[in-house]
Amino acid sequence: MPDTPLLDTVNIPADTRGFDLAQLRQLADEVRVETIDAVSQTGGHLGAGLGVVELTVALHHVFETPRDILIWDVGHQCYPHKILTGRRDRIRTLRQGGGLSGFTKRAESEYDPFGAAHASTSISAALGFAAARDQKDAKNKVVAVIGDGSMSAGMAYEAMNNAVEATSGQLMVVLNDNDMSIAPPVGGMSAYLAGLVSGGAYRSMRRLGKSVAEHLPRPFRDAARKAEEYARGMVTGGTFFEELGFYYVGPIDGHDMDNLVPILKKAAAIDDRPVLVHVVTQKGKGYAPAESSADKLHAVVKFDVVSGKQSKAVSNAPSYTKVFGTELIKRAKIDPTVVAITAAMPSGTGLDLFGQAFPERTYDVGIAEQHAVTFAAGLAADGMKPFCAIYSTFLQRGYDQVVHDVAIQKLPVRFAMDRAGLVGADGATHAGSFDIGYMGALPHMVLMAAADEAELAAMIATACEIDDRPSAFRYPRGDGVGLDIPELSAPLEIGRGRIVREGTAVAILSLGTRLQESLKAADALAARGVSATVADARFAKPLDADLILRLAREHEALITVEEGAMGGFGAFVLQLLAEKGALDAGLKIRTLHLPDVFQDQDSPFAMYQQAGLNADQIAAAALSALGVDVAAGAARA
Image 1 (cartoon, rainbow, N blue to C red):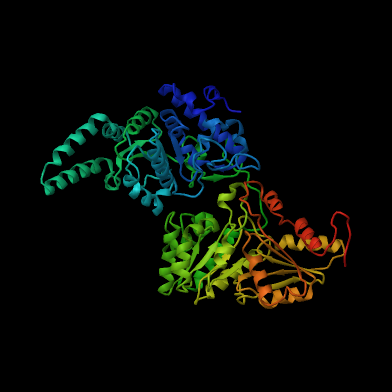
Image 2: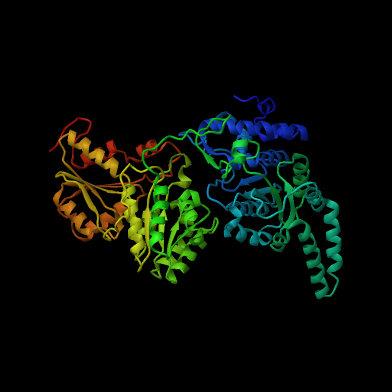
């Protein structure tokens, strides 16, 4: 355990309120050490948290949390916050089964007033808290910390545009700028200017000037206001935020506690309009391996603290994400109309590889999934072949655009939905649970799910050939199963599945990568004398009606298996069987899907065990459908 004598005296933020600046600096150093040590044992998001250590300490020192509301955008920067808010004793359970969430979570602590794992929600939520406070005539303060790319999403600006009208009291937005994308390098002069414009004397002078200007004729009044705002904008860069109605303070060095604390105190006293405090930080600050890494060790597995070397297991198969990137490059080499779109996740979606090969055909639109989808629709409408690569859970944010801008117009946008199914340590917020239902509900959509890496390659080829309607293919986080991939995969026949193993008594119809577990289940059934057919559906839409009806006709029981929520593939199959009268003769059917709960983080195996989608559970469902008493060990041929 690291040596942290001052941190050892802090159980909750109130314990820091009497600290002087020297103690706050020491506390920040110890929180950074504790964060590094904890994440080295659990894995998780490291770089973002290290960048906000001083800011976290300062905010909890200045504001009376939890009475004052503190909301962290995205939540992956909240590990230091958790250490300071009574959860240090559990910090080494981060992202583990039964442990702390890797994000803020309301059910976990009163210091997490709003849960967040997707980006750009903090200002809207904070504005809601501020409006609720105003309605109750309370006096607490509200702070939202947003950054790490989240300001690229339109939702943040929608909230800021509404802020002046929605609340008449205090509201602070802290813009954590860790990419130097807005402000020039900061130093003593910028800290001085930030302190100056946040101070009472300057604000009093502004109010006096405004009161005088109000008595001037309108042209002179408007000119005076513009002159004052643009004069400030020339030295502080805040004109844009001022136009949205915010009082701008910054930029300030987010690691300089001597300036950070007094400026936050001054800004907290501004209650006549919302205030934006622009804080410049360094992602990965204070840990050399993170500072020197290209991604600042944004997300890591367990690692050695001294060297920074991560304990990554060696795999015999490529990740599905890498297969996607590699196969798309193959398609782009022979088709100049293939282009790729990502929403701030080039490495997460494999499009970093595509971007290296075709930089001019790669578009990263930032955290703006709505824009990404409609942008892709525009490309498709003018004859390009856009592949829109967005995590299943993030595509939910662009669903209206999928419906309105893509599906209704039958535009051939190709959606690559990474992280389909359960995602282990990232938990419910990042699980790709719902895309089968929400994409399969759309007219004209072709919806595929890869059972392995070779099937994924074939589905990319298939999507490339679909030019008269939208298509989507889903694949999970993690590695493939080790199958060979052809040099150039042939496209699949639309709406056609495949029989993988022939049997007689029960049919297991799998959609996606539970196919391997389905084959293991068939082995287990064979050991009990039960002959099982295993089929790979490949398509959730259009369904292979001939295959499904044959399975229903030739087997006593049919089991559907999918890595998605209820209302998805199993529901589609049931509807087909009902419409065709295939249930009338007494077919026994079970639909296995994710449970109707939001599953907390755990190992993937444990999560699928909870979901009832591992091999032994698939076999048990088949035996149950056949009327076999599993506990009694009976067998049926």
